[in-house]
Image 1 (cartoon, rainbow, N blue to C red):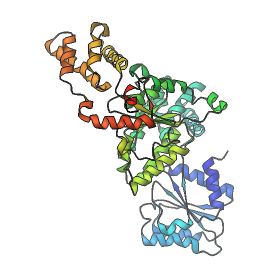
Image 2 (cartoon, rainbow, N blue to C red):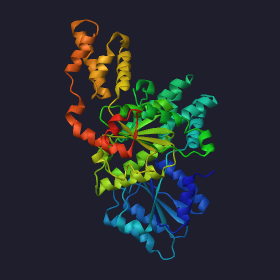
Image 3 (cartoon, rainbow, N blue to C red):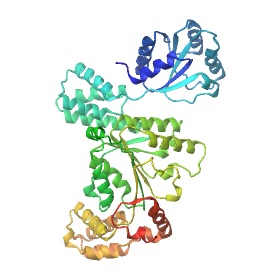
Image 4 (cartoon, rainbow, N blue to C red):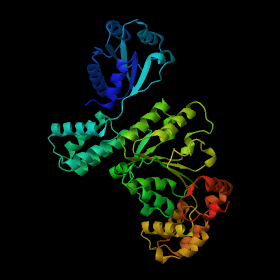
Length: 477
C-alpha cells in the first residue's frame, strides 16, 4: 500500500508544479518514495549519474524534453541564491507545452522569491509505526533474532521519532548486542534515540523518574490529570473524546511547575521530551528547526512535550523571526491531532504573548501559588523521607507556621542546609538545625512581592488554582 506521502507526491507530480522541493535528511528513503510515485503516475524519473555539477544538471534538464519526465536533483540547497542556478530552475516554466519537472531533495532551505510561483514544498515525515515495524522485521531476519509480538511492539514504540536509517542502525546494534534479552535491547534503542535527539540541539529526551507521589500539594491539578489518565487509550477514541492538547502552568518560580511537567509523564507512563526554544533561535533556519522538532514529537506520540519558561522564547509584539515562530507554534497547538500532550510553564505573565493563553491552545491554564499550610507540611515530609529522615522526629508545626511565604524549593533547601550543619559537626539533624537554616533563609517573596501580587491578580480571572486553597488569589477580589 502506498504511503500518504507517496500519494501526495503523486498528486503534485500530476499537477502543474514544475519544481517540487522535498525537505528531508533521508535521501535514500525519499528516492524510494519518488520512484514509487513516478511509477504510479506513469512518469519517467531521471536520476543523476553523479552528485551534480551545474553542467550535469543543465544536461539532465535538457534531456527531459518529453512530457511526463521528472528530474531528480541533489545538493542544491546551498546554491539556490546563485543567479545561474535560479535561472536554470526558473526556465522549467518556459518550455511551452513541454511538461518538464524537477524534484529537489534538501535538508532545509528557504524558497527564493523567483521560484515561489512554480514550486511546491513537501516534508517527508518520519517513519510511521507500520514502517518501523517493517524495518525491525527486516533487521530480525538479517540478525537471526526472533522476537515475540509484545517485544516487537515495545521495540517499535521505543523507536518512534527516529529516521529509518537511525532506527535500522539502533535495532541492529541492540539485537546484535542483546539477542536474548529484549528489555536490554529496548534500553539500547532508547539510548540511541536519546543521542539522536540530543544531536538536534532542540529536543532533549528526559528520563522520567518523578511521579506525583513526589510532588507536594496541587490537589486540584492532580485530580484534573487523574480524570484524563486514560485519555490516550483506544477506548477514549471510541467514546468520542478528542486528543488532549495540554496544560499551561503559570506561577511563582520554585513552586514545582517543572517538577509537575516531569511528573505528568511518569503518572501517565509516557515518554518525555523537552523543547528548548532558545536553542531553536540558535539554528541556521529557526522556523524549519521548530517544524522539525514538532514533527519529531508527533512521530513519537503518545508523548509529553515540555516547554519550560515559554515566555522567554517570544517577545510581546515581536516582529520578524520571533513573530513567525510564535505564529507557527500557536497554529500547531490549535490544530494538532497527534497524541502530543504539551506542558508549558511560565513565570512572568507580563512577558507572555497574549495570543498564547487563548482558549484552544491548551485544555486548561493552572496557577501554581506558594504552598498553603497543609501543602507545606506535605512538602517538608516528602523531602525529609527522601533523605531517610523521619518527619515524626521534628516539630513540623513550627516550621509550617514560620514558612508562610516560602516556595517548595526553598523548603527543600532549608532541610538541605540543616543536613549540612549536622554533617559538619558529625551529628544527626535536629530541630535546632532546621530553625538555624530557616533563620538564614530569605524567601523569594520578600524580594519580589509586587510581582507576585500582580501574578495573583492576573490568575484570579484567567486561571484555575492548582490547589484547593485559593485564599491568596481570592484576596484580590
